[in-house]
Image 1 (cartoon, rainbow, N blue to C red):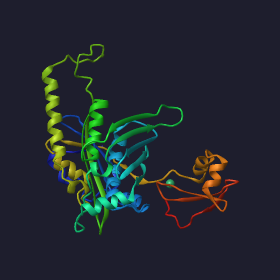
Image 2: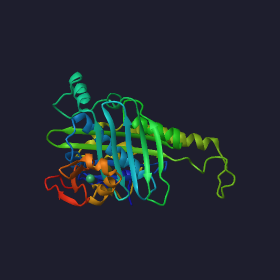
Image 3: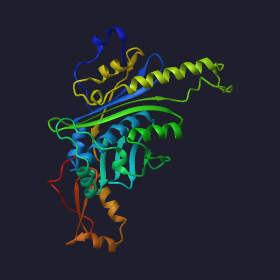
Image 4: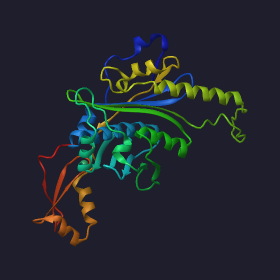
Length: 341
Ligand SMILES: [Zn+2]
């Protein structure tokens, strides 16, 4: 744990850019907790497994950064999935993250609708690429949060309608409504023909405070003081405004270290930095898993899916192609030309 004191921040803040990390932090004055996500090389690696049009890649990049933020705020052992499902040009976007920080993602979309959208509203090609509004990309739909902790535990799922122009709006709405956890976040993804994709995100959350209230059964209950609740509210409002003052450029800048970013935003609050978690691109597909999926098909369906006795399946997440003998289900060839994980 590192404390960046306000008076010697320049001496302690690391100067080199950090990347592919989730950086947890806490504001000293209020105890509010948050995360910064920076993702560059890993994001490029994820997107290079696909050949998505820029608007789709942009939304996927934002979803990846958002899923990393959210997964790291939850206490779980397993897989966290953020998934959209919608009627518009983009049908679905899926990003899932394991507790160890292995992430993978894909998008399902209608090529012709995306092309029509791009033709109708040109985006400048010089300078960083700006995506389209969420509303244009997805139309009506919903956003699902799933935590899967394995076979023996309950699967948790939360769902919220996609609302507004950005994914972050729907995420805030979800936490405010469903979890009663005040949440403020900002996410940005950027593409530059020279440096490729980068995404950055920052979030602060306020958990319901057990020490403020009238729960007299709590052992260490502190008598309720209305002015204390007002102070907490002020702290939250002040910190939210500071967070929202971050610019899109600051979030994705390859030369601005996350520690420096936090000091810029919250130097008056004091920032405590915890050990960052690194993020890697890793798919969980394997010949056995694909075979299990094919095993759920009827012999007739398998026959339909096969060409010259071979069934071919490509993982949507990583584009790895698997081939099986449709009778024996033995692996025929593993595609050597497919992109590696
Ligand atoms: Zn895969």
